[in-house]
Each structure stands twice: as structure tokens, then as C-alpha cells.
Length: 278
Ligand code: ATR
Image (tube, rainbow, N blue to C red):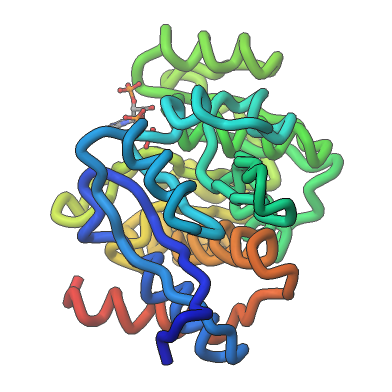
């Protein structure tokens, strides 16, 4: 029930109508009996949107494409790992002192990826091939290094892959040399295989048995061709909802101080996916 005490949360992005985060977070509030609401928001101007949220009493906000880098300019504090990644996906407005609201920025994308992968792999001392060199690869790569994993980057455009690998301080492997890699896990951070191009594969299927675990961050469809081909070759697989779930669970804990109801949140995400009939 929304009343005068309802805590305000939401997501800012452009576009934002497709976001599954409102379903996930509102289900979590409901499950734990928290008087909170989480809404999608598309600001005309990020700066005006940010100061509006701060002024209107919002407690926490998710930040998505295309604002994860630009939002950093407005924040009072930025978590050191988010600073290293160069992107913030979570805002917390600290209102402990009503005279001085403090805005804090975090990145839970790397936590989400680590926690999803940690369900199948011991991250410290593992070797992980990360496919892609965009924002998602950057968060995943830095996060794995934080956890003590060895990271190798592969990317369609070699120059972009080499640049990210140099920033991470890890090796880059050219597409023609991926066959030489054996690793504990492979993570696809590209959009290859995403609806409607569901036949896409980010790596040749016959190489998938070089990896014990294959994780995809694409979640529409949930069983991507990559995950199906990997399962056929005996790999353990992790679907894209797990990263979304765990990054959201980390946000939920930052905002509420409570541990997140993972099962409820995943069910809410699955219902949203089914409603889209992908
Ligand atoms: P994000 O910030 O979501 O990670 P991005 O910055 O657009 O998105 O990065 C997309 C990544 O997916 C890039 O690594 C891109 O490869 P290029 O650097 O060669 O562009 C990769 N990618 C996207 N479509 C691809 C495709 N059809 N085949 C291979 N890689 C693809």
C-alpha cells in the first residue's frame, strides 16, 4: 500500500520501458513487507533528473544505458571499484542528516556477474575468457580481477579488445587464436544471440568444450543458442537472468540493509520474460 511513508526507488535510462527491474524490485519489497515502490523514469536531462530525484526524497536509483558514465559527474561519493570501472549503475541518497543529502554511486554489475559465476566456479585462481570489449565486458573484467581470477579478453574488433585488455592488465586473444584457449569459464558480454537474432553465436560451437562453465549475459531468450550448444557439449551453464538478478539483489541490500529474496526476484524476472513471449 502506497502512503505518506512509502520509500521511493526507481531506474533512470533511455529507453526504460523495457526494463525488468521494476518487476524484480517491487516483488522483493512486497515479499519482505517493505513500504517501498520502484518506478521506471526517462529524464529529458540527466542533470535535472538527478537533482529532481535528490530533492524529491528518493532513497535509491538504478542507472542504466546511456547514463552510467555521465551520472558520475553529479555524485558526492563514488565507490572505488565503480571508479575503476568508470561506470555507476546504483545511486544511494544518504538522508541520515536531513540538512545534507549525500549522493553515493556504486557499480553492482560486477558483483552480479561475480556472484552468478561463483555459483559454478571458485573465482580466485580460475581463468575466464571474456568475450566482448564494451561497457559490460569492462565491468565483468574488472570484477573478476577483484575476485582474483585470471582474465583473457576476446573481441570481434581487435583494437577495442586490446585497449580493454591493456586497461585491465590482462591478455587479449585474437579470434583466430581462441582455439588455443582452455579455461574454467567463458562469459559472453556481447549482444550476440539476443532476440531477434537468436541464431548468433559469439564463438564457434566446436570450441565450447574448452570451457567447464559457459555464462551468457543475454537473457532474451533465456536459453540462448550459446547456452544450448554449451550444454550439448557437457558444459555447465549460467543464464543471463542470474547476473541481472544478482546485480539487483546487491542494489536491494545497499538500499534496504536487508538480504534480498533471490527466489522471489528470479520468479518476477521469469514472469516478465514470459509476458514478453520471447
Ligand atoms: P555494452 O556497453 O552493452 O557492453 P557495447 O559497448 O556496444 O555494449 O559493446 C558491445 C560489444 O559486443 C562489443 O565488444 C562488440 O564488438 P566490437 O567491439 O567488435 O563492436 C560486441 N558485439 C556486438 N555485436 C557483435 C556481433 N554481431 N559479433 C561480435 N561481437 C559483437
